[in-house]
Amino acid sequence: MSRPRIVIVGAGFAGYRAARVLSRLTRHKADITLLNPTDYFLYLPLLPQVAAGILEPRRVTVSLTGTLPDVRLVLGEADAVDLDGHTVRYTGPEGDGGTLPFDRLILAAGSVNKLLPIPGVAEHAHGFRGLPEALYLRDHVTRQMELAAAADDPASCAERCTFVVVGAGYTGTEVAAQGKLFTDSQVRRRPLRAGMRPRWLLLDIAERVLPELDETLSRTADRVLRQRGVEVRMGTSVKEATHRGVLLTDGEFVDTRTLVWCVGVRPDPLAESLELPLEKGRLLVDPYLQVPGRPGLFAAGDAAAVPDLEKPGAYTPMTAQHAWRQGKAVAHNVAASLGLGERRAYRHRDLGFVVDLGGVKAAANPLGIPLSGVAAGAVTRGYHLAAMPGNRVRVAADWLLDAVLPRQAVQLGLVRSWSVPLDTASPELARVPGGPEKARAANPGPAGGSRAGEGAEPADAIRDADAGKHAEPPGPLKEPDLIQDADAAKHAEPPGPVKEPDLIQDADAAKHAEPPGPVKEPDLIQDADAAQHAEPPGPVKQPDLAQAPERTPGAASSDAPAVHKHRPRDPSTLAPPEPGSPASSEGDS
Image 1 (tube, rainbow, N blue to C red):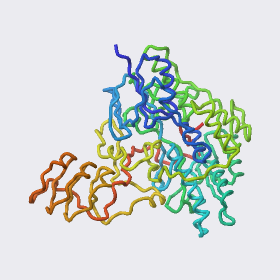
Image 2 (image 1 turned 135 degrees about the vertical axis):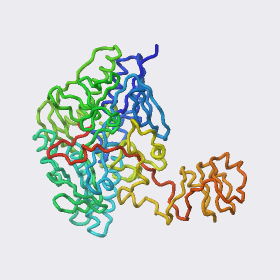
Image 3 (image 1 turned 180 degrees about the horizontal axis):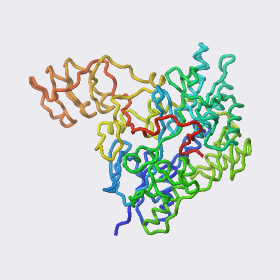
Image 4 (image 1 turned 90 degrees about the horizontal axis):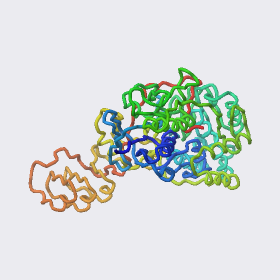
């Protein structure tokens, strides 16, 4: 008899914990497969310290294959789930597709950046949900400070050293707190113009900082931020964003080159594609984290609306603490469905919250005891070391080095602005030219049961002024050649006197293709073998490809970024949140 097949979609807090607990409970009595875009688990609460140059990027990542030896890792993004056929269709990192059969499915796909219908935000803001976004922000802030220090124009210096963070939840508060320390350390080594200092603004429509926490923690965080020089503006948000600044809801225009979007998250649209009952985009489950009416389907983390048994009628919030605990609970319940143990209803008891404010400052209330200052900082870092499933010694070593050595403020240039757009379904992945997004856009697959809207854009969007610097200038043509590979673009021959060029689909064909003859409309050479053995074009009047686009000198390079897939926005998240509503994310502590 074959072993049952368990597929887990997503390796966030819920998915990673579920895989680890299931591998221990089943003890080789089931085949466990983990589908995830990356080969690591990301410890999100420490991401602001990566952006601030305190921790190296690998410190907040934990190898999946190294810590889950009995779990099969499949790299890819889930595109569709066939509940009746018990299969998951996915796209791999190089654009190749695949299908995973399952007997039990755990949906732990997590969440993505929440967007609001504010003009210019999608084009000029950047989120803070993945490692590429943190690396980009560190480089971007460093670059702006270096350009500000070298600027002769006071206005240019002021706008470059002004940074706007929208969202005063966990993530936004920690980004502003850590960012102010980071820029202040750079100014000490390379001062700005006389009388100028880095300016950080923290905006939120809520009435106070950290609105989802108790007022004691909120007051502590607010006091530390203001003492540090952060402009905390509650009841204020962004009305419009441009490449030169943001217009606030109070009418003020702030000149800036940096807009960090931390207003919260929305559930991964994969849950919506299942066409099952939802609660604000989250898949409705019972207290055992099982979808009613679907015996083999479970969900946990940000993708699941889990009943809060401590607050009847409510659902657990989208936080890392709940996702981590739900991962353990869903693992026990999946094992129980296979006859291994008993089912457990998900219950929780808050052990307290911690907010790292940089340096030795923090706000914490372990076991309900409010703390601030050095004591809160020690508790906060101790909590993170205990919660991390790996890299504890390396993280502690980086903290020690940061305490005794100056931070290194250098640009690595690894992540460009266009590779981390705000409106992305995969914040954990940086876009690359010619990446799998192009294949998914060209072959979106069947409409039923998959994410809609993928590959909908006809061209890549340049997200801000920095991206514009690195983009290739547009040529004078109206219809560019269709060159499907970066290598083909490098080796393609210059355009001949023909009006309609060959359509070369392959880099090898580009290398060996014969030069165009004097014909007006050439043949379509489809691959490298055809290019080698094809007869020279005759004096035909009707070409093989009647609709080949015209090629004109100055055509845009095929190295331009590929079209990135876009998942549908949850209509319920388009309206601005009510004042005081939480804007937390999975990964907040």
